[in-house]
Amino acid sequence: MTTSDVTWPRAAGPLELRLPTEAALEQVLEWRNRPEVTRWLLRTEVEPEAFARRWLEETGDPLDHSAIAMLGDEVVGTASLWVTDGMGQTHGDPAVFQRSEAGIGYLIDPAYAGKGYATQIAGALLALAFDELGVHRVTAGCFADNIASWKVMEKLGMRREQHGVRDSWHAELGWIDGFTYAILDEEWRSAR
Ligand SMILES: CC(C)(COP(=O)(O)OP(=O)(O)OC[C@H]1O[C@@H](n2cnc3c(N)ncnc32)[C@H](O)[C@@H]1OP(=O)(O)O)[C@@H](O)C(=O)NCCC(=O)NCCS
Image (tube, rainbow, N blue to C red):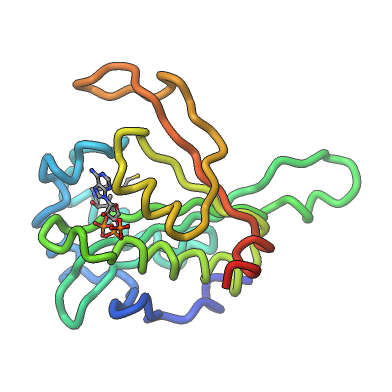
């Protein structure tokens, strides 16, 4: 599948996932660098112009399917999906594991947190990954202390596959634990 096969906007419960526009990214930047948003991110504070440019440039990248989550005309969050190669042996047919996985991520404007929106966004990203992009497996990572983030993954049936003991560097807290969650194509289908 190429990026042109993915149609936008896409529904995510009451939200709509749309391709980024300059106006939408301006709204994202109103909250993107707030401490309550950056606290558990790896890419913490962003430079606004570079942030917007990167989002706009990545539109059309066949390996990137990121979008802005809207409630009517209001931006409530961002949704990120990137396609990667799985692990696999080089003999045989490498096409089997090339582009066979996706990673997902989500950010919610603190004004809209706690309403189930991240779960709606992540669910829509899993549907895109499995039903349209046809990947075999989707993963997502977070700091172990980011309870709201891993609750989202667990609500969607993702499995905690890795508890990395002090594997993640946090600028204020030092080495702390990280989690990796995953779900397979067949698990997604059987859970629906
Ligand atoms: C983490 C984040 C995405 C969650 O978004 P959200 O829209 O509030 O998430 P949802 O409402 O869909 O689900 C959150 C769940 O975590 C639960 N939760 C939140 N904080 C919690 C806590 N401290 N302890 C236990 N559960 C908690 C909520 O109750 C909810 O579960 P429920 O539906 O069973 O009640 C959002 O807060 C955010 O964008 N944070 C900043 C950026 C970030 O950390 N992104 C993730 C990077 S890995």
